[in-house]
Image 1 (tube, rainbow, N blue to C red):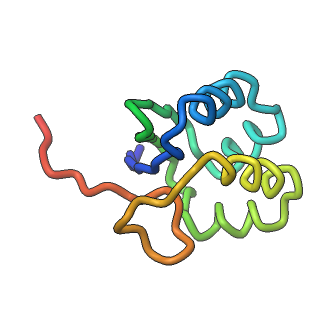
Image 2 (image 1 turned 120 degrees about the vertical axis):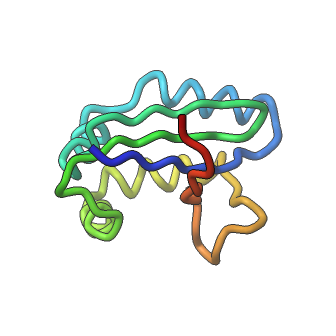
Image 3 (image 1 turned 90 degrees about the vertical axis):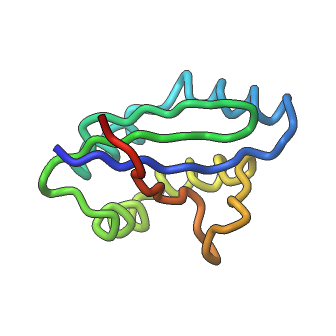
Length: 109
C-alpha cells in the first residue's frame, strides 16, 4: 500500500474552521463511496490551527489523475468540493488552482 500526505489551509476564522470540522462529522455516503471507488483505503485528516494534514493510503489501482476524472463526472463530489472550497485557502506555494498540496517525505524511522 502506498501512502500520500497532503496539506491545505482553511481560512483563518474560528467559525469557518468549526463549520468545516462539522461537515466532516457527517460526510455523505456518496462522497465516501467516491473515495473508496478510487482505491483509497485509508484517509485521515488532521487539523492544527487552520492547517489541514491528510494521510491517504491507497491500493495499486489508485491514481490522482483517475480520481480527478471520476470526481469531474460526479455531481455530488462537485457540490461537496464547491462547498469545501468556501472554507479552504490555498497554501502560498500552491500551483494555480491547486488545493491539497502533496508533501515530500523527508524522514522515516
